[in-house]
Length: 426
Image 1 (cartoon, rainbow, N blue to C red):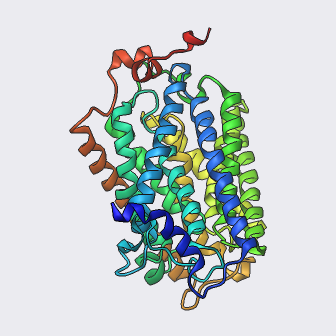
Image 2: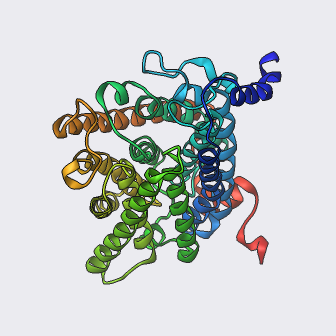
């Protein structure tokens, strides 16, 4: 109880004590980017996912996104942040100094931003990762399983990866793995986790080709894509922790990559099917942006275009193969986020080279060592995400079923989980 009562004073204490100077401009910038991302993530994912699913699961998707955002916020403040970004000790997990945010530094690392602002920014990444997973159990997930799973997943799967690659852990400091904007930690992790969940749950009931790739509301899905696009831009810029040229560079590169990816996927689908489907634009934009986010602060705009093109092309091929295999990747989480993120992480190795206009390699690193570091990061993310997700999913499933019954699913997740349906609004 004493720790809980000390929570608010400790935050104030962390901001005013210590000799490190806080820059108000940088702080306002990071807070603004974090708030913008958090404001856009929820409606963006609700519309993006909901518009791509059958109408009788729209309210279920919205409720799941909101509930996950709530449970992950509490879990992140209580334990998640200190696991991911607490003081570095062994390089495997952050120390317990920041549980309930009780012991935060005046500023984060070498930045001029209070650690409290950094906490909020990283909360945005954590909420994004967990809420994206709603597409993995689309139309068939049991809300009683979803909420505890998401909270535990953010602590068991996401937080350790965040520490290893972005929080001063062993992959970042010992091997030199680069992941500036979350291509590996967020998107690669989400894609692999979604694949595991999809395989454990099985396909949706009475799924047809029309239900799968097309959904019920393409316009709403595109509107949601725009919000998620903007949220990713905000998180990418905020990751620089400064209102600086680096932030502008990261924003430009991410936007350029998204544009290149959108046109690449749209063109590929048009050539393959003769139709320029709205979802093609959505998939490509996100895949391109995700691919470039791995090193958005360290590459040139020209190579950002290449990253966006490659990320979208890899995602497009993956989506076709996944669909042909019978895996029910309802909103293309595996293809867009998983393959797009992992491809982007590998592309970062050559694209940050100074000869290609990038910022160059860190001291002691070179093209080959960077490729090895990135490959190790990809391997660890794939293995940890797959194993951790399976363990957490099955543990929670021992208490409550993962999915609703087939009869309830046919009636609609809106009605089965929440007692509402589209008919109520007529």
